[in-house]
Every structure is written in structure tokens, then in C-alpha cells.
Image (cartoon, rainbow, N blue to C red; front, side, top):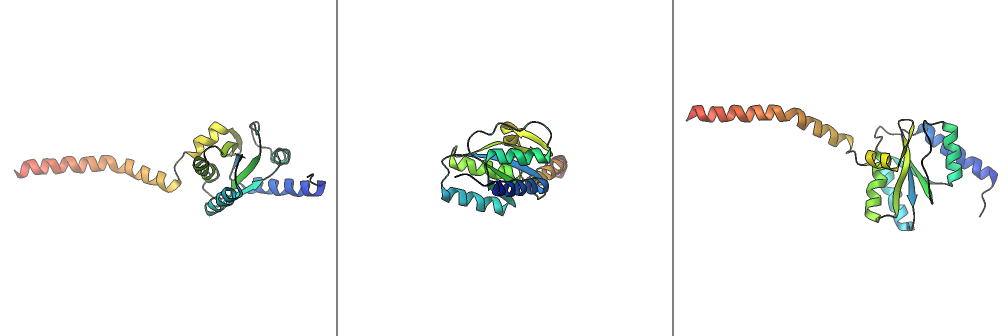
Amino acid sequence: MAISKDKKRDIVAKLSDAFKEASSVAFVGFSKLTVKDASHLRTELSQRGVRYYVAKKTLVRRALAERGYDGQVPELPGEIAVAWTSTDDLTAPASGVYEFGKKLKGALVLLGGVFEGAFLDAQGMTAIATIPPLPVLRGMFVNVINSPIQGLVVALDKIREKKAV
């Protein structure tokens, strides 16, 4: 069914506003996705502060052109959706889609996205999706800082044990 020009303008305006507020955007390819799985995906993404919208490729491209990101729009084959967030967690759209896509075995894939004002292809967005969340990264950093101190404490304890004997 054809979409009227007014409806197309509304969709492009909605996408343009979304891209304006977005800190990162993921382009999602979906095929053989059931309504139940799509609803579950939307729920999981919304819990992370990610919005999800299905639109025609031409309308998405038109909204992206209005925004003027650096680089070239990645190839967008098949049916696509857009996932974006305006929160501080820049990896949330990519990681949310990536994790849910692993459960569905190929029904949902990352096709590319926009990260820090530039287009990325599928490989770039997949690399971003595999970055651990910020609290985990902070924990890893604390562990790296703590490791030499912990090693020193263990060595001093061994010296204390030898002297006590």
C-alpha cells in the first residue's frame, strides 16, 4: 500500500528529530522476525533507553541526508529498522540489537549505523556492540589499577611469613 506524501513528510520529520537527539544510531536488518519477537525486542531495547522504528529505506536515507553525517551511508539491503538512543550509553543500540540477534540466529542483524557523527559499516557497529557496558569497563579499570598493589601485598605477606619462621 502506498504512503501519502503527508505521511512520508511526517515520517521523515520524525526520523530527522530522532537523529538530531540521538547520540548513536544502529541500522537493523530484519527478516523472518515474528510479531512476538519484534515486541520482545522493543521491550528489551526500551529498558535500555533505546527507541526502535521501522521505516522505508528511502525515507531513512532522506532523513540522514538532512542531518549531514560524515562519510557514506552503509549498504542497507532488505527490510530495515532504526534503533537510537539519546542517553550517555552510546553502545546501547548496537549492543541491544546484537545481543537479541544472537538469540534469533540471523533474523536480526546490524547493517551499520552512526557513531559520534560518522557512518559506520556492519563490522564497525558489531565491534561497538561487543564493547562491555560502562560499569563493567569501570570495574575492569579498577582491577587493572588494583593488580600491582595486590601483588605487592602478597609479596610483603610472603616476606613476613619467612621472617616469622
